Image 1 (spheres, rainbow over the protein chains, first blue to last red):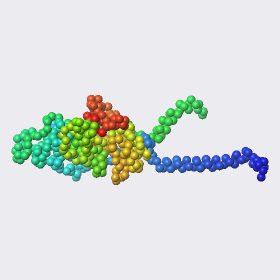
Image 2 (image 1 turned 180 degrees about the vertical axis):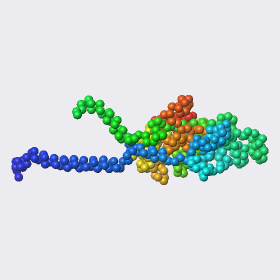
Image 3 (image 1 turned 135 degrees about the vertical axis):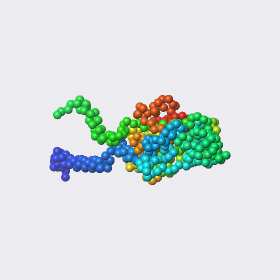
Image 4 (image 1 turned 30 degrees about the vertical axis):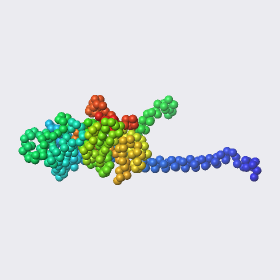
Length: 192
Length: 243
């Protein structure tokens, strides 16, 4: 077939139209792909993604839905106003209830059946008051072995208001010679 | 209807705002807590810290933190007089059970509680490839457990070492600033359990919060300010040797 005949048999306009079919098919494939992408995206990406930023907005509500373990001192004080009264003039006035009594949300939800455990002051008080050179100098500290020879602290100190009002009562309550009179570090300051 | 070029240009910003609202959905779904009204931070008053470990224990109970991992922990610093650039730091079991006696009483000894700094420009959220960690509109850096792949990028990115991989869920974990508590009007578990008030939750957007007066009247510093992370955990009385 000569070149001349080939040109003659296929008109230039007809040929352009015939070729454009490829483009339409290609465009259709792209359109279908884009549509598929958009459909899949709308199904797979959670609705709240991008609500506030490049993350799932609902995540915050899910994190916030976690139940609490510490009820908070305001909750304690609604029932235990008597303890608040006892505390208010003492050095422990600003120590929250659950700092010593531990998490009590379950007790607050159901006060009759969930009772807080009894505390051992021999263990509890030294967590804060055992002498350590890294503690602030103004914080009341004792070497517990020296101070009470293992006796529980509430033999002399009432935890809700720990200052000893009459030293005489202590000496009568405690006969052990190992128990010293106040051995606290420099006076003043302390827990605020 | 024909729109001139001038009118189209005027319409575009309005359309953009409208589209943003379509994307945003209903902004505040919780009726009692409005995120946009808060910008949470924490104040740590170091001269009050006694290293009792109450905060560490409270955090572990409140947030089910696995044993041996910490969302908050307490470090003990010993800085000798002749080498202030090389402090000796220890934190036995994160300070959870308190601290053994400080042997070297010379020099300076003090406690430093640490936790996520909830940076306003946090490196950890920037490296997350899937949008699993983010800073919430109320200023708390959070992790979406359902989205986290466990790739550990964020753990490496945090300059403060505040993140870890939860061995059970294999997702990154860190302090949420007790988001489940602060959104209910409570303070964080660590602040609730702190006996001396060394840790205090603060809301920078609340004009009545005592933090504003405190920041004005005290020498307050953040950890690693040169990292420009805009940390929101403020330390009062922070020694220069603290890393």
